[in-house]
Image 1 (cartoon, rainbow, N blue to C red):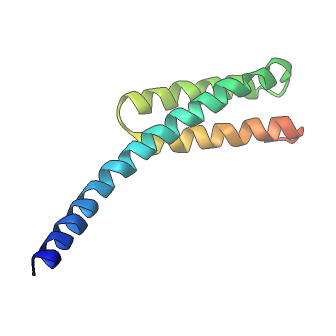
Image 2 (image 1 turned 45 degrees about the vertical axis):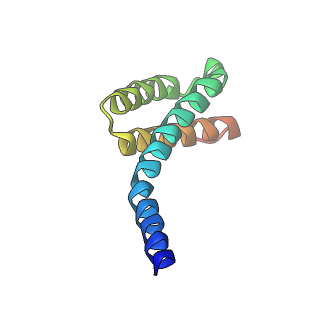
Image 3 (image 1 turned 90 degrees about the horizontal axis):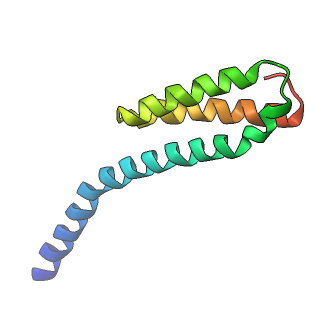
Length: 94
């Protein structure tokens, strides 16, 4: 009986802690994406498509969302900016 109660306590604690870890992962992913964009800005030095300004604007918006605690919005914005950077790297038209 004591084992099942103890197991139940551990399972409950793990389930309650899961959202905390998920929120932390979102913040990490937001910051990781911002770092990747910052590292990829060398591609923008030769950009003639005008994407440089769009990506700079996206970074500003993502940082504002991150500061406001809206990690999902930050991830959404940075993911699109990373896709645009990848398209520039491939020579495509994003």
